Structures are given as C-alpha cells and as structure tokens.
Image (cartoon, rainbow, N blue to C red; front, side, top):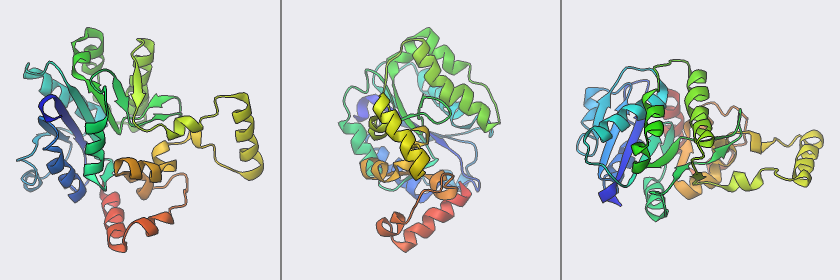
Length: 271
C-alpha cells in the first residue's frame, strides 16, 4: 500500500497542539503511505517536532476549514509531478483516533480504492451528501481538467455554514452533476434509509407515536458511533463536545476507562 498511496490531514487545535491520538495515527500511518502531509491552521513549533520525521507539515492562515487545507495538500502533492497513480486519502483532525491501526488496516484491505471516490458514509442531514471526515480520491481523477478546477476554485471563506454548503455538500453535488461514481466505507445507515413506502410509513409512525428520531436525517457519525468505532476505531469529536442530538452516551462508560474518558472530554474542549 505504501508505494502508491498518500495521506492528507487537515489539522486544527485551539491551543496549537497535536493530540496524542493524532500523533499515534501519523506515526502508524507512516508505515502505510508513501507521503503524509499535515496541513494545520494552528500548530506550535515544538509540536511540529513530534511528527516531523513522519509527515511534512504545512502551516497556513485559519480560513476555509478542512477543504482549503485539502486544496493546499493536493497542490503540494501534484506539484512534485511524480504522482501518476494510486490514491489520496483525506482525514480530518475532527476525529479521535481511538485505534489507529484499525482504520489503517481497513484502508489496506479495501479494494478498488484506485477506481472510485469513497467517503466515510452518506448523510441526509441538510441534504444528501458524502461525508468527508474521511474520504479517498484516485490520483488519476486530478488529470481531468474539470475535476481539478473544482478544487482550484475553493475560496477562503471563514463561515462554517458557507463551507458546508459550497464544499462538503457542494462536492457531492459536483460529483452527481458530472456522473462521477462514489461509494461509502460505512453503509449501515444507508441500509436503514426508508427507501420504500412501507419503510417510510413505519418510520413516520415511530416518529409520531413513539418519538423515535428519524436517524436517516441525522449525522451517522453520531447515531452510529458504536458501529463506526468498532469498524474504524474512530469517534467524531463534536459528538463528545456538543452531543447536539442528545444521544444516550452511557455506553461510553462501558467501553472506555474513566481516565481515557477524561482525556476525550479535555481534548474535545480544545479542538
């Protein structure tokens, strides 16, 4: 895998730190990828030393969120003109890497990643789109002028809602409009989507009479956190930080030791 695959990490930490879990992920990832680039909007010089032997670090001004970091990472990779095949993997620091090896081994086992775009999952929150906390793109897609131009046109917006609309959701719209096939790493929520009249009726009854939340309209990294943790060894930070859907997180106490839970909550506050 290492010979032909590349990793771009979009990083932000309010205190300019690199979390221990992310550091471990970078070190482990060095065995899987030919090149790793971490693009950060805030990282202290002393922190850079922790990973400089495993990844190239690029510091940039704090605008544009993850997609602008990915744009810079793509430019850096393609400027070498040595990349002609393989896959570029994109990972955001908005995830906790509870078990880095689990995610990396999944990448290693997953077939045909050099054939089509893959995202973490599909979400219907706001509107249908591919989730980009983690995604991958075959290198040869960037040889297509229209595809490369989409990335080149990414601008320096500061408002999160603008970024989501134009780039996270906008990327999926671009793919659909141009008949570009994509797939998902996690599909359990897709199986639960009410795509038939009977399923829609059952879903509506459950919602009206039993107040069951319409999970298919919510963020799958929140409602399917246990399945995602089991499969990929990752957790979405804003689930711990905000838990906007008030999901019952009692199972955290069963899965994690008290000391680790304290670390999760502390790091969530800073990220």
